[in-house]
Image (cartoon, rainbow, N blue to C red; front, side):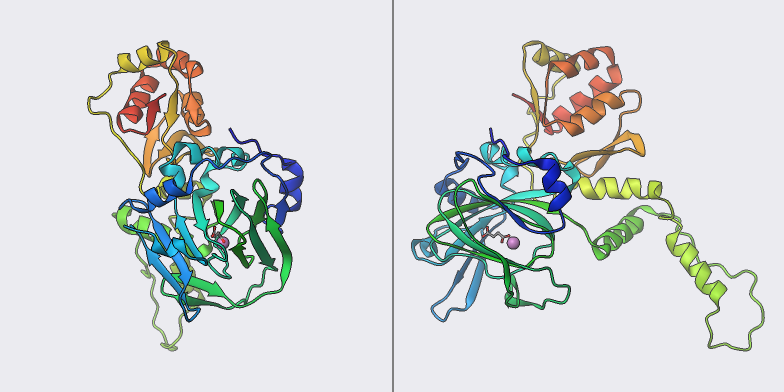
Length: 377
Ligand code: SIN
Ligand code: CO
């Protein structure tokens, strides 16, 4: 179990999304939850996203995508192996996300783990997410620069985006248990001083373009009767080259008709934000559980754990809807239970009482277990 050594309110007021900081010994007596060999094992799997980054003899940046069959590059200095979404695949590593649950679930992106040989790093870059980088075994030297809206970015390699050099506002060597927090948009680079493990807990911060393009995709898929531009009161025109203000107003009305109020965003955003960006390790039960099986399992004292990386959210504005893995479910009449499932990683006897009292709640929970989204532990 990892306990964060951090004054959370002070951190949120002073640093969150505002400026980078080092949380010295954020985890006291830190022990790596995963071994470098296990990292290599994950990088051999087809469904797990992995990358190997290094510089060749001419000091040119190179990047290869997994799955990998061998790891010769990691026998020399200057190489880094990175694995995305380890929280989906490794239960002990997943425990590293839990201490950051003082932030809302929907903002959590994934847990990325890197293993670097001395001098290994991915080069200077800017991330699209807020990130806590935890130092595991070894030491790594980090530099972080000031946020700069026009800092140039370029492709150092097809799979590697870098930014131009920057002056450091943080220049530090991290030791096991130290945490570097970097808000979205601050350039940074880190190079291992000795063989080093780093854990990055990332928090998505979608930008306007991400949101609008996703909303447009949602409309294309779901809006069967789209509103059409209308100029039924057309008058004869002299200035035929001109688009009149009232015409622009009508275009604006048509475009915004499906997103004029925050409530209208709920079906789209709920699905979008609960969709897993990386594969999930779903194991659907071979034989479907009955509702009675579920109650009996609780009675035996079992708990049910939410699948690592599964996204489950609800909206304050629409409390009777749950969005789980890009699907909408109703929890009308049992919102307390529905919300509890989204708020907690594990549920136990507190839920079994509610399930015994509410048949619809039991039906939904059984369905979720049969989908492989919650499993008995
Ligand atoms: C790494 O762990 O090697 C890269 C982390 C980052 O800079 O975001
Ligand atoms: Co980064």
